[in-house]
Length: 455
Ligand SMILES: Cc1ncc(COP(=O)(O)O)c(C=O)c1O
Image (cartoon, rainbow, N blue to C red):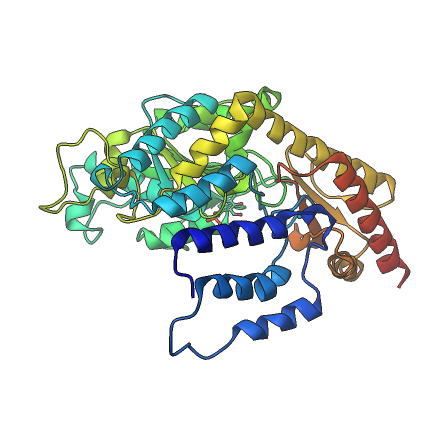
């Protein structure tokens, strides 16, 4: 038995390298045989210690074949990015460091990397440099954190201390969302004590955008939730048109930009993202379009005091004199140093690299849409970003086509329902997707679509 940490680490790097070598040539979804292989991991709890290297060998032998190859170039399911090389390496380093990134005192480097990454992100997204940034697990928690900051500010303005006194008997906050609000915002609202159903819902247009003229009169006790990147269509709400009036009324405007926020890094999408920076808070996922490993979300809040008040944790052993603590911006206290990978991704890509990645993915999405349309299939959305909704005939034929595409294994895309119709959603979110990948994927999609229509 070799319990040297470096032995296990080197073995892990070898196995991971083997996994990644030729990842572009592998089938994207596991076959039946690989799924059955998972049973080999399902053993009784070992009574005695096992060799760390052998444990890793077993994980690779039976676990790697059963992965969904979303780190590869031809995975288009949900909105799931890959991992850029520097971020992959940084996650290994961050695991070796094993830093508790709640507090400076536990990790000068983890805290510093998040402080620097915050500055870079605000610069990249062209946001006010004074915004507070929290490194959370994903956009669901980012939405939750922002909603807590909004809750703090709206109630503090009325003289109510919600962190101290809770929501019982508090002045009422109105919550206004669009018809196509993402489920994670509703979950976040429920976690924050607002309830999923206690919202005013505004009608959306055929792309899923809030219809500005349908927004009710807002006031200084309203939280308005908009979105940059509807999860199916990729559509953006009309920020300039909506946010100015909302802010004049004293409302707090939150934007769920889980993937769409990254479009702010690319001048090509300026018309789409115009006015987005005028909101009060934003949620984004670094594990989606910045292509860092899971789990990595970002909450950004213009009102630094509001987020800090909403998230601050006080204990006699915690430093309250520090100028910056990562835990002031997140629900968690102890957590991993996820800013390390964000730092590495941003530093390795640079401003132009992020922008090129976003632009490239959207170019691939447009090509999917135009060639699928030319092949006779119906595109349901305006392809404004990286999302394509395609229909291969009626609902049944579309379901069958998706099944055939997934079984074929060249690429992977999943199903969704859009305006009452079943569709396949293609989300191009990986840095690794090339023109050749799109060509191979299109061939598989067109072949499967025609087969589904013929059967
Ligand atoms: C628009 C939008 N908001 C929020 C989320 C939730 O993100 P996460 O799964 O990282 O919590 C997603 C995930 O797909 C999304 O697309």
